[in-house]
Each structure stands twice: as structure tokens, then as C-alpha cells.
Length: 555
Image (cartoon, rainbow, N blue to C red; front, side, top):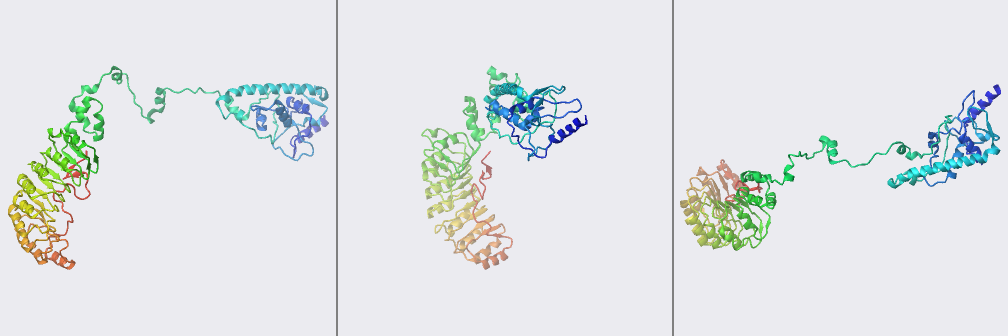
């Protein structure tokens, strides 16, 4: 009894040798028998290399039957697992507690856990090998059939992967002989354990219910969407006034698109109340586009620096009159023919800017028909004659602001201007009349327009100190510009301090810095050289480009 215990302790000490090598024993029957048998004694229990559970095989890498490997290679791997090292082994397998390997008892192999029945190794080697091969073939075939369906849908299935060679193997210390040997690969273990979920596309109703409050979706009850199937147009039940109240909040581009929806929308989108103001500055207008714009009933139109292509109007465009009241054509590229056609349709203009435009007597005659014109800007315009100037001054009786500077007027045109100008004019700019505007013209102007508030005589280099005497007769003059009038001496400017109404004086290029300081001391309450550019009748001043004469041009 004591000797048997001593032998058992020796076996326990040999279970975890310090070093271990792969066994050089070629006896396949010994390894196979060790894999299928478990030795249990009545006095104590020890682990055997034959008691291999699923986890042990997973750690050892035995589950390689998902590839195209043969059963013989699997058998050799299992035999390698159960093979033990000899006494000269020099590799370690930590944390393994196994009984003495079967090759240490070459004559007999225990296959029973309770009895003492033994088999002679020489007589039963062939039977054990045949049994093992049949079982491994069956397991391999079952595994291939199980993984066949996965390979068709999953390109990353274990059957298409390659395994690394078996480097280190270990045995399980469990001694349960009833545990079956599961040869499933480690990479597909969890996939086989968990049942596959059906991949069905959720319905839109389920999607909306799953998203909840995080996403927005349109929900229509049957009563709300009834008109879709019934074909009822509820817009027909709305009056034109309600439609116009909705359309007035839409941009101009959207209005153009709405006109293509239906005939009623086309008619409502052309209503004059929707086209009160329009800004097309710096744009290029295609032929006949200007006619369509004017026909919409626009009141405030800005076309500054626009390019209007020919023809701007069709031959039948003379049958209507526009509602334009504020028109800005400053620096606009437009022909005389198109400009005449446009002016012939305008009879309600209140403020007009034709800066740098090409004029003619016919165009000026059409402008003169706007009896309610209050502001006229003709800066740098060409084509003005004495006849056209006289016609406009006699007709435009309500004119209050006129800018006719740098228009290359003749002496006769200047005479016609100061003789027939409306007495209602309170702001006048005649700058740039070199060698054609004299002191007598200033005296005539003073008698014709005694209520002038602003007067710009810049670059009229024919004026003398006598013009200053005539200017001092204005009782309400607030702004005066005599810049670059070189015939007027500096002493004459000091006399202007007696004008109680004069607030601003521009004399650019007339005095030196010292003389300017002396003049400022003589007239401390007057602003000298405060305005570089004149704002008389100009639609825009400074960097403002969204309004003309203080009126918005964009909705």
C-alpha cells in the first residue's frame, strides 16, 4: 500500500516536469489510447491526457477541421498533444497537472476509470487506430457540412482562413471521462452557439417608431391625406387675396418658379403688388427681359452697372405704360434706342438717374414728359444740347434737385439752364462748366432760385470775386463748393463768414495749409472741406448698394 502511494506521488511529481519536449515516440496507438481512456483509482484521482475537454482542445489548437485538412493530420495533432516528454526534455508547459504519460508504461493501457481491466498494447493497437480514424473522419465530415452554409454568405468564415502550425500544446487537468470531444474551431465557436437572427428589413412604420424623437418624419392620418387620393385641390378654395398674402413672402426667383405650377399661380405671381421693388444691379439682362420686368409693375428699380442686351423691347412694347417711379440707370450699358423706348413708357417718374448715359434730344423730350419728376441726375451724361436743356427745364416744374455736372455743356446750354430752371430747385450741381459759366450766370441763378440750399460750382474756373458777391445774396444757402475756382482770391472767402445760414464750405485746391488754418480761425463755426464728393441727386452715397434715394430695393 505504501509502495503504491509512493508510486502515485512519483506520478504526481512527473505531471509537471520542469522541461518538456515533443515525444519522439512513433507509437500512434499509445497516443490514441491515451486520448480515449481515463484512469481513475479508488484511492485517489489524477488527471489524464486522455481526459481532454472542449476548452483544452481550443487552447491546444486542435479545432482545425474547418479547412481542407485530412483526418490523418488531425490524428497526428492529437497524438502530439498526448505525447509526453522524455527525461531529457528541456521545454516547459506551465500550469499543467497530468498523470504519467502512457509511454512510461509501454505494456498496458488503462481504459477504465473504475476497474482494473487492461489491454495489451500489442494486440489492440490496430483496433484503436481504426476506431480513432473513423471518429475523426466522421467529425471532419460533419464539420465541413456545418460550415458549408456559412462559407457561401460569409467570406471571412474559418474555412477560408489558414492556421499557424501547432507550436505549443497542453492538457486539461479535468478527469471527467463522460465529457465529449468537440472538434469545433475556436474562431466559430460563438457563432455556432448563438442562433442566427433573421435579417429582415423593418417597415417604415417600425423605423419611425424606433427613431422616436431624434428624427423628424411626416405623419399623416387618413383624414389629412384624403385629398391626395380624392384629387381635391384645396388651393382652389383659397381666394386670390390669401394667395397673394402668401406669395408676398417669397423671393423673386421663387415667384418665377411658382408661375409654372398652374395658370392661376401664373396669374397671381404676376400681380403688381408682388413686384414693388427689384434690384438687378451688376446683372446682364437678356433681350426683351427689361420689357418683362417693366410689365410686372415695378415701382423701384435699380439697374446700376447692368448690361442690357439688345433688343430690350419688342416692336409691340409701346402699347403699355409702366408704373416706374424710382429708376437708377447709373453706369448702365444701354443703347439710345432702348433708353428711348424705356423713357417713352415712363410717365410717373419721381427720381431718375442717368449717370454716364448717352442722351439725345428725343430721350430728353421723353424725360420732360414726367411732370412729377423731383430729382434728376445727369452726371457725366453726353448728348445734351441747349434745346434739350431748355425743354427739360421748362417742363420739369416740380424739380427740386438737379445734378448736371461734367456734362460738357455749351455756353448756350448753361444760359438756358439758369434762365429756365424751376424756382423749386433747392439743390443744384453744375460743377465742371469750365470757361462756359460766368459771374452773370450766378446772378441769374440767384434771381431764379433764391431758395437754394446746396450749390456746387466746383471747377468753374471762369468765376471771379464778383460771383462771391452774388452768392452772398442767397438767404438760405447751407452748402457751397467753389473748389478749384482759381480766379477767386483767398480774401474773398473770408467775406462768407457774414452768411449766417452757410454751414459747410468746400474749397479744395485753393489755399495752402497755413492759409487754411487762418481761415478756420476766422470762421470757427463753419465746416471747411468736409465733403469730397457731391451727393446732389445721386441715388446711392458711399457704400450703400441696397437702396436708392433712401428706398429699399430688395425684399
